[in-house]
Amino acid sequence: MYSVLRKLLFSTDAETAHHTTLSMLKTAPNMGKWLRPKAQQPAPNLATQLYHMDLKHPIGLAAGLDKDGIALTGLEACGFSMLEVGTVTLRPQPGNPKPRLFRIVEEEALVNRMGFNNAGAHALKKRLQESHLTIPVGANIGKNKSTPNAQAVDDYVACTEILAGVADYLVINVSSPNTPGLRDLQNEQEASRIVEQVIAERNRQTSHRSYQPPVFVKLSPDLPNESLVPLASKLLEAGCEGWIATNTTLERYQIKHIHARESGGLSGKPLKTRSNQVIAALYKVTEGKVPIIGCGGIYSADDVYEKIKLGASVVQIYSAFIYRGPALLDVLTQELAERLDREGVQRIADLVGQAESYK
Image (cartoon, rainbow, N blue to C red; front, top):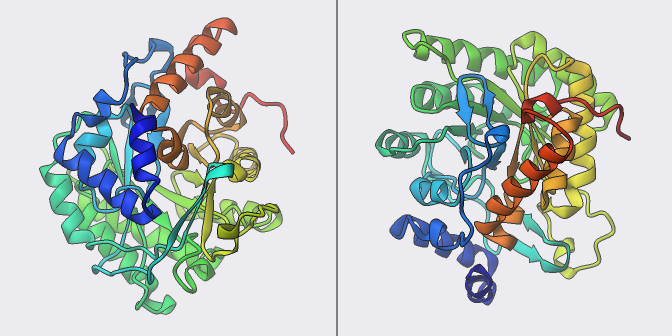
């Protein structure tokens, strides 16, 4: 069924198809189930935990697909174990000029330079308050384009004040390549200051709760390991409680497609290797003390298995969902459970960080 729908969606430009998909999932929230002909409950050996969050399996949705949380019920029906909304900013903003989203079909990849187009943190808070989901939802936060980097921390703290009480976890995004100057915040001094103040505000907003939403940092795949490792160590000292590895990349990996010339972040299959390298480096430097959410180039159960074995506790998909649809979740979970059975692994969590090395 999705192959037919995909032909229709792919006959339009990528951003129109994106918004059409969200509209369909919003107005027909059971559509995700209709597009999963072999939908079934995930095997018990896939159940895992991320801080206070109980997950039926380790595969969630990455930020960027539903920035404003307009189709949460529909996305839950697609089979994800968790959702991440955003990136959201304090004030609404339109994002970058169109066109700003491009398909590279041959590589099952996307290039985007959306620029944090969203309705603002207050609008997202309202939608999260009104949602009635059975799976966790994280909020990915960034700064407004108009906010100078010197005041960026104020935007992150304000977003935390608004969203900490309604999100299951928070993600600090200082690694998107599509907001001018944002990646300049991805240095030890600035990023540490943001982490410290976000956590302090999180604590103020949720001191009355039995648990507090953990704060993750989403990192760029374009940071060389010699910069990544000391940054990770410094952010751990600042209180960072987890990583997302990784954001999109400015690298093009010798892709010849005309859309590879477009500016913006590349996601999809070509990002797999570098994402894996970053996961391995982070797991080594943190010794598994904080969880890693693996993101980038996941299209098969083997891809999930590899990321978890390298050190990811859970993973997220985005581009693969666009190209293969909701049935992909059932394929991934079924094949992953079967592999665990073949190898005698009792729980998916037992695999985390078990790889000997990765280059």
